[in-house]
Image (cartoon, rainbow, N blue to C red; front, side):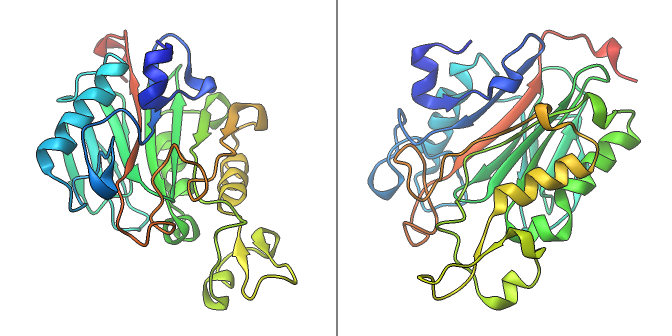
Length: 258
């Protein structure tokens, strides 16, 4: 699955590189978009040519042998609502999707916010979470794990991945935003005029607080603001493309659903 050609399109989390799961976080290279969206923009909410975006999605999912018509995508609003899904489509108003349907990918778009992917393989259920600062402080990660638990998943058996996102060094915020975060995730330095937020550390702490063990949480250290492989909303003043994080149960029969 993780060939050199695949890596042009997508980063495959090591924690999910195993039979029965297909997961990834797209990069910005190898697509058909031009200008500020060059080249693998997968966000239809941008000003890019929709035909190019759809072609890019085909390239992305094709690299991992997934059917691009079998994808459920969250219509994100920076909130904390979670939706269980059984079919493809766009689910407006939700920032996390979970499913136990085989060969249905759940997906999130992002361009500085974190995408959190979660799987509980014994139960056969996966989730994809859009975790920007608003959703994170509103409890989107906690809500998703709790909803997976309600459907029979055990956090002790869960694995989770936190995607490339904006780093604490680049995530400057106002005091009003910093006040919403626990103090240990607010970073202050003499050379900084305003506080910064360590978003990925806070997300990791939330996952662990829900009972997911530390060895089962993989956190990317790549910063979308600085890394040339990714789009960055903040670095490019909003005129940019989007990445996509996604996860699917594969090589399973729906008879395993409970």
